[in-house]
Image 1 (cartoon, each protein chain N blue to C red):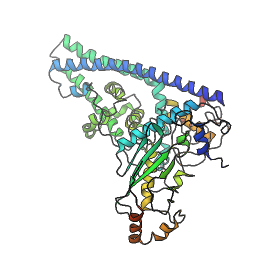
Image 2: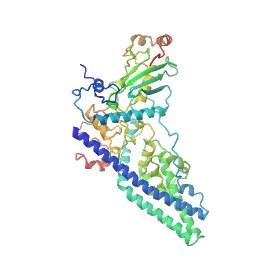
Image 3: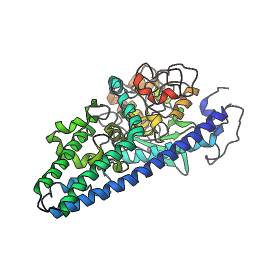
Length: 317
Length: 186
């Protein structure tokens, strides 16, 4: 008993370190992206004909934290009602796994996608620079560059509208599909700046969006971004454990111990398994698996494809 | 004699409580990671306090009493259009050391004439007992008590007089006012 606890804490420490490291990496890449964006902005200003694009191309670096985030008010009037939220969650339980999926993907894929999208942006930029040096009046190239931007712009808002949905509703997968570009929704453009700037903490992720949005799993961003301030209980995929308020790491985030969709971190889950063994979200007993540690098998029947990560830990699924 | 969890908890508070009680380690066979627990309870309570203060819910408030974050004082204002409208009730909340996993003890400090509150201020509310869930927090507790004021459960009264009188709202209101003593101390 003692050992396992100790291990747990060390594991968590490791995980946190890891997360930190990743964040550092990300911020480095982000800086790169910002630089690129600024260079491009400058280039386009030199051209003097693309002012409409530049605001998009240079996400303001000033961090203006949102004063007011949408704060879902849970009104617990009925003493019997536990969490109104667990209903929508369970309804969309067919969808929720996608979140986990995307999380996994983001971890494993993040680096590569980012790099390739970066290179793409470099390509664009190269084109821009080429114009600059060689043919200042090569309007065709400029137009190309512009349209390249527009495509990105169009793509961006289409994700953002997803972001402004009700959190518990996970929109269907096409958002991830690069082909969204072609079906961009013009009406979405207006909400761009507001949808992402608010989440100050995770804003870095959204900065490079111009370049990598097509490939980056947007679900994660949306959930992480929107959840930070809102009441954890209401939402399907909180960024922190609603029990201990510690951040959920990717493993925790893909951990769905109960059919009702209530998420919590592995440590709190373990605590509960040692005690009354009931899900805090719906008060139902957790599926009685005695192997307590990492018992993911309760999840398996519901979302078999979510277990890409957890399979390695529990052999029983 | 009652192996009550709250009792255990009191005994296990490791020095965070201002009055460190003698540890009776034999009671809970889990001496494991107590410090870790205390840390996490601390974090949770601090986060809750922050969230509560940011939320600005009307009619409820709570704040730790003195230096001890495990003891809070709360206030609840009676909701509009109930017989408790305009009344302000003080409550005390004391959190066990394994807090979110066990409910806090919540009591009325101000005497409250209510079917589900006894003369000592004890509250009969299921979510503070068997219906507790670790995902509840101070805010939801206070909101629940606030709504309990206006919607008593007269079937299992602690205060039978109040339960009997509930049907006569005018008389009831008079009673509420008569027995209401604005908190004079604490």
